[in-house]
Image 1 (cartoon, rainbow, N blue to C red):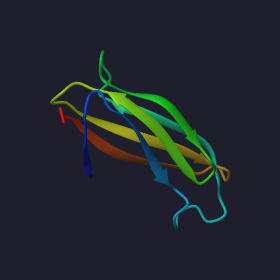
Image 2: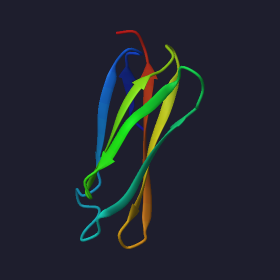
Image 3: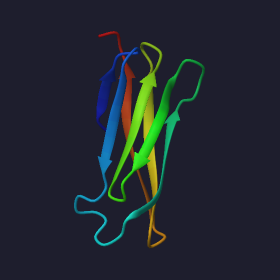
Length: 93
């Protein structure tokens, strides 16, 4: 899993392109994002959306020195589901 570095004061948008050779004729019906570990002042999802092929989340916060896993779980029109995760290490930049 790739680890991205994020400043604790930065708000960044991260997008997963599910349509790139993965969905075929399916489209995303629902998309949810989660962060682990969860704790006060931790990394958080402040906004999320999808357009049927891509899923986007705005991520902010985090404690310096901590690493967070951010997961996107989707449910497709066909009823199938999938999940992808990325990691963020919070460092002062």
